[in-house]
Length: 380
Ligand SMILES: *Cc1c(COP(=O)(O)O)cnc(C)c1O
Image (cartoon, rainbow, N blue to C red; front, side, top):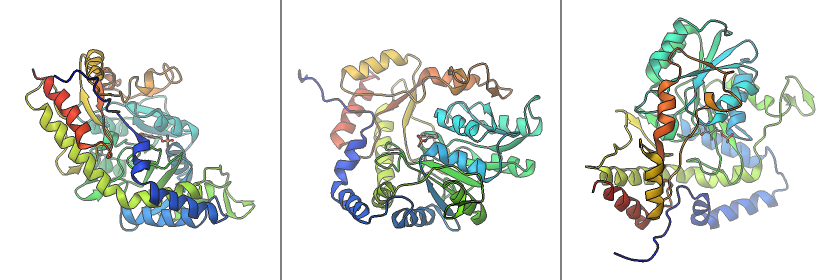
């Protein structure tokens, strides 16, 4: 045995991506700085066009300040606010639920399928057919494609179409995930993407983007994100300020062409973890047939989580918890926010057990091997 203290493998490392891409990013930053135009300019417009084309044919993209705003802007653009309920999950970044309330709507939190951690389609179908009493009518559903794998959208789309309810995808953890070859974000009525630095596509600061096949909706949201202006200084709509700056757009234009390769590297790391888990006490993350998983996180269910996290840390492997407390149990929402008939039981169970291994494309082969050796040691 080597007696030296093992090198820590971080759970995430946004600085590593910058170091790997530094010449191209520095050049893009210099170009944006020298342009003399810093907000909603050529870089932003080019990023929107490139992002729309990357997601799929017929899509329109609108850049904004962050992923939370992207969700709220879509709702506002659709006219969904006070007097409407929006169904989503409690097992998500709190941002999803915060955005619904920012738009003035009432959130309804549904439970997850415990194998994939995504919205349970049967509970959604049940609440669309028989809405919980005392809530405004359900006008939209926001499934969250969590950890890099898409929600089981087929039955949800069908139920939403039948009920006349909008389906908005939260793709903040799944840029490049797919279902039967179609990219996440292209199947619903609109999609929101955070571009926070640690996401699969991340800026070097706050940024967000949204996509929709509806050109009128995209144009309305483009006005809403800047004071409701269609013409400079004249507000036709009641808007907000949620713009994308040129610096972030220029950085994102460097990164977008690298995203598919970065996702492939995440999949390669996931496959290495899968093999290292074989024969051990923990199951590799479940994948659905026909779905492309882009491993924003590689998440295990571990009943004795605290002990295992401490043991891994002792051998140099950092882990994370996404997320430790479901939204409906957090102080700002507890005893106030509505839940579906399932009562988020699976969500609460998952919150006690989920543990995320190190996962980012710049992990070196030797760091991946350190994690794999640690996982293999759990079988002994
Ligand atoms: C990160 C994230 C968001 C929020 O994005 P911000 O850019 O931080 O506002 C929303 N939903 C999910 C699922 C996320 O992971």
